[in-house]
Length: 183
Image (cartoon, rainbow, N blue to C red; front, side, top):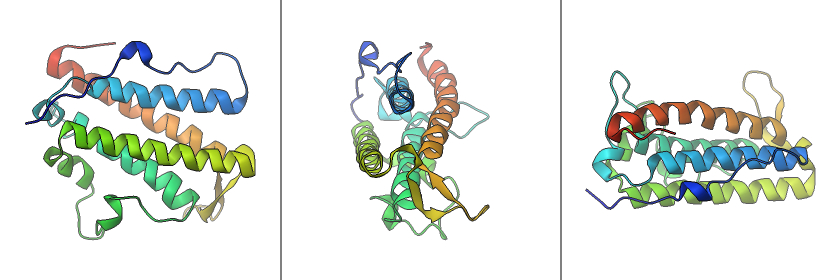
């Protein structure tokens, strides 16, 4: 399929053991993001599309899914700016629940990495702006459909760390099934 994308695991962001709440939260999120990059690095398109039964998840699908999750929380919920491309052109009422996982099979490793990196970059800009305005207590524009309350930036950052940590566990198992790499 396409060339593999590299990632230097020694350059992976480490979350600070001491520091402000902002530094620890952002460092922890950056660590989780880099862990996903590492788990997906060095693989071909075919490998990124490889399943680890019984799940239908793939590493490429996880990259695309987490790019969508970044846009969902920071673009949609927090800013009410809609979804970023290519997610803004998807008719979500017509596609399967796992659209990003299925469609990732058609993307090259480079396309997936660029999509993921651009989503992270946009999210980081939103975080920077929110921190400058109101800090971790800055509230989302949209409200939770379950509670009717806004989301704080603090809550979204913690949720994103949880989301990545859960999916990085999946990525670890999938990667090991592809080439035996662990860590």
